Amino acid sequence: MAKQSSQLSWCVIRLGSDMNWWVHETSDPIHWDTEGLSMLDPRQISYVLDLCEPLRDYGFDIDLMEAAFYSFRVEKEAGEGKIRLQRIRDSIVSSEEKLFALPDVLDEEKGPYAELLDQLIKARVKLLNDSIEFEQPLTADEIEDALNERNSLDFSEGRSGHGVAELLPILENIP
Image (cartoon, rainbow, N blue to C red; front, side, top):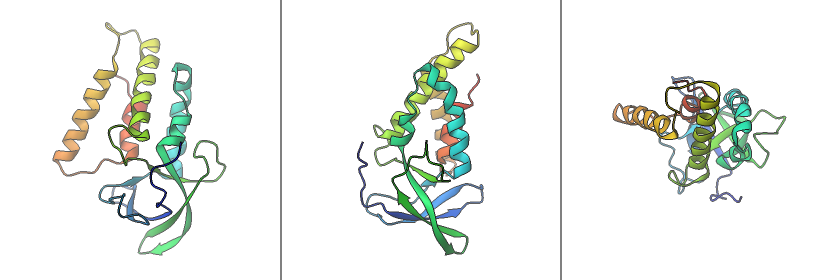
């Protein structure tokens, strides 16, 4: 699938006080507002991919990870604790190189990252219902409601949600 923003060729990231990477500047300020824009680091990507692996048995297509993220490699230090990253076409799923990943949030409602979150929830619900004997089967709506409540709380408190903080509550969810 072709990515919507071909203008995005590099970005500068900084390590936040929360120990997560945040985008400071991009080559495409027209399409990408850097306010609250998060970047997954290689360690986080590896952990998320490990958590996705068992979901493949429940219909999760790992290729959704590929479509949902732009991949970057470190180009150089950019001073003051910042790093400049160069966009590349390598797969975050199969690359041997340690890559950073920017969620494709250009279309927050229907874009590839939104589709990834939706499919992760569905596969996780299937796994949990298969693994745990609930009084009533767990539904995707229950997980989505909990996530929406958490996101609303973060928003009302002025906190930006990091990509890994969106993914892990789905992938580690045990009601």
